Length: 295
View (tube, rainbow, N blue to C red):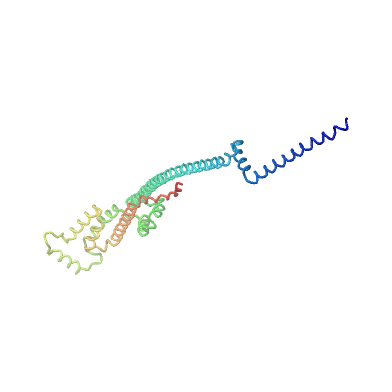
C-alpha cells in the first residue's frame, strides 16, 4: 500500500512546480520589459521627491545663502570705506585749519621779532648820537654799532667811530669861535701895510641892496655867532670863510666840517634803523593730502 501512493504524490507536485517556475519567468519578463521601456524609471523618479523632499531643496537653498553673505560683506566694506573717507576729510580740514593758525602765529612772531630788531637798531643809533653830542667815547657801543649798521652803512659807521675818538661838540666850536673872533675881524698876521690900507678903504664904501646882509666883518661875525647858536654850522662856515682873518680859523673850519660829516653819518644810521623791516610775508600753507574717492 505504501508503495502504491508514492508515484501519485510526485505526479501532483510536478505540475505545481512547473506552474510556479513559469509564473516567475513571466513576472521577470514583465519587469524587464517595463524597465527597458522606461515606465519603471519614471515611476521611480515620481516617487523619489515624495519620499525625500528635503534633499531636493538643498541645491537651490545653498546658493541663496552664499549670495546673501556676499552682499552683506560688500555692504559692510562699502560702509567702512564711506566712514574712512569721512574721517579722512575731517582730518584734512583740521590739518588745514591748524596750518593756517601756525602760519598766523609765525607771522605774529616774525612781526614781534621785526619790531624788536627795529627798536634795538634805533636804540643803538640814539645812543651813538648822544655819545657824540656829549663828546664821549663809544666804548662798548662800538660793537653793536658795527653789527647793526656795518653791512649797510659802512662809511657812516667809520665816520662816527672816528669822531668819537676825536670828539667835536657844538659847545666846543662855539667856545673856539669866541676866542678867534678878534683875529677873524682883522687881517692876517703877516698882512702888509698897503694891504691893510686897501682893506680899510674898501670897507668904507660898500654898495648893496637893502635886503642883502651886510658884508662888513662885524655883520659876518654876528651871523656866524647866531648860526652856531642854532647849530647851523654850515652857515657859520660860509660866513667865516669870507672874513679877512679866515686864515686864523683853519683848524676851526676843519673841526666844523668834521662835525657836519658826523651829523650826516648819524642821520644815515637813524634812517637805516627806521627802515628796518618789521614783518615778513605769510608763508603759503602746506597743501593738504588728497582724499580717496568714495566707492
